[in-house]
Structures are given as structure tokens and as C-alpha cells.
Length: 207
Length: 110
Image (tube, rainbow over all chains, first blue to last red; front, side, top):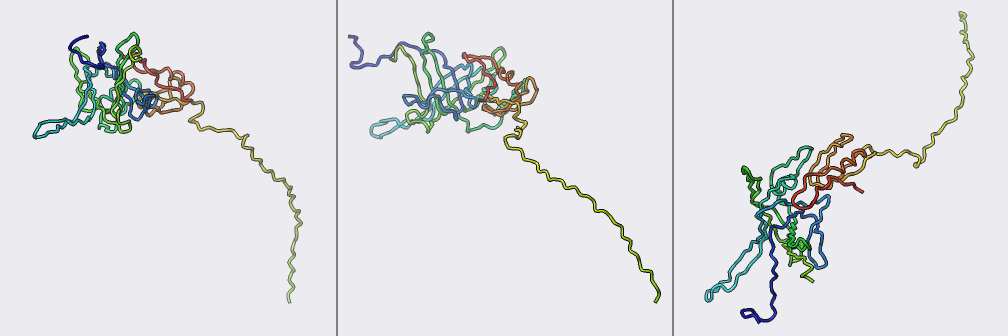
């Protein structure tokens, strides 16, 4: 018996530590998810088609995943704050990107228009932002390369928001900073997964 | 009463021209199945290819040098047979961070 522990049924944590950023893939929101839904009722994974390509966001750095919440305290003048009501507004991936090509991927990050290609040139128009463009995001991270155990984050309805900054420093690769991918509630999804889902596949532990 | 010469009317006998009766020949309308099938020039000896990349592409056929214009991912254009195989070999970009190889620009439409 170990002192200083709780009693009863205890869910212990596993000594597995995840390191590094996941791979990031986006696809036009109008394309259905690959599992829509799967046998457990979850919507996730992307499958690219000729009409709806899956785009890889290459060489990201400083990747972080966060959420935005509105909180309102329940204040009682005789007691003080008794509760905090929370409303989830959105999730957000932020990152810095160092791969600029091809332009049809860069156009997503810069919120540009359709790319025209006439070999040997590609041209990307920069005009008004299309506010009707949404994306699916699929972010898998393999944490055991030997057996292929991995986790993934799936966000259903995302939009690239906020201003980017393209740093062009001498001796360094161009860096596209300020990239924010904001995930909103998708009302076409079941309520419990309106924003998305977090998954894990590990055949040695999840049996 | 003065005598007047009665005018003579000279009659000349003219034979009636012989008109040969010609049988009317009615052209027979060929049966539908015998009519040659004429295709629009746009589709003769052409094979549809679908663009797999999210771009507006102006591409010259490697063999015929015909200009083909694709309007975005999924668009289909009929391409001359001679250009099909070289165009199917066209791949874009250089592979990056993941193991995904560069995709082909086009695929055949079945």
C-alpha cells in the first residue's frame, strides 16, 4: 500500500510523452470527411479527390493548439463567485510556415485567389478575402514510429483568420508567421462533436 | 367597189416537237443506319483528361502543341490522343516534409 494516494478506482496516466508538431492537412469544407461517420459515429479523416485536393501545410514551426472561451461568473453578493459559466467560441491552431510552394497551397495561407498556371509560371492574385471559404483540418501525430501508434485532431469547419507576416531575414528561410486556423462549431455535425474530435490509435494499450 | 386583194394567209406546217417522256427518278433516302456518323470536331480522336490540381491551367500539348485550358481542380478537357500519355506523366513540385510524392497533374476519365 502506497500512502498519499487516493482510494478506490484510479485512472492512472501512461508514461508516454508526445513530442513535436503534427502533420497538418486541410481540405475544402465542401468535401465530405472520409469517415462520415465511422462505426462509432465520429466524423474524421480526409480523402483527397480531383475536385477537392487535400493540401499539406509543410514545415510548420511554433505550432500551438488552443481554444477561445467566454466566461461569466455567477456572483452572489452574500457568498461571492459560486460558479463560472463557460461557452466555447472556437478552437485555434497557430503556426509559422516555412514552405512557400506550390502557390496553390500558399494561396490558402495568404487568403488569395485561384492560381493560374502557364508553364513555367504560376500566378496568385491577391484581392479581397473570400469569407465563404472554410476548411477541414486533420492533424495526425505518430508517437511510436515502430508500431505506428498515433493521435490525431480533426476540426470540421475552419477558417484562416488574422493578418500574416512574411519575414524575409538575411541568412534565414522566409517565414510566414501569424498563421491562425480557427475552428468554429459546425451545426451539421452531432452536438457532441460540433467543433471536431481528438483521437488515438494504439493497439498495444487500447485492446 | 374596189377589188381588194384578199390577204393570203400562209400557213407553215410545223411539226410538233417530240418530247420524250422521262421517268421521274426519286432519290431514295438512305436508311438511318447507313448514314455516316459525323462527330463534332471537338471530340474526334480526343480523350478526356481530368485536372487533379487546384489551379487554372493553360497547358500546351507536348506533341500537338494544342492549347488546353483547365478551369480548376476536377475540370475535364478533351485532349488529342497523341498528347495523352506525355500529359499523364506530368507531375508537379518537389516532395516535402511528409512521404507524400508529387501528384500527377491529370488522370484519365473513365
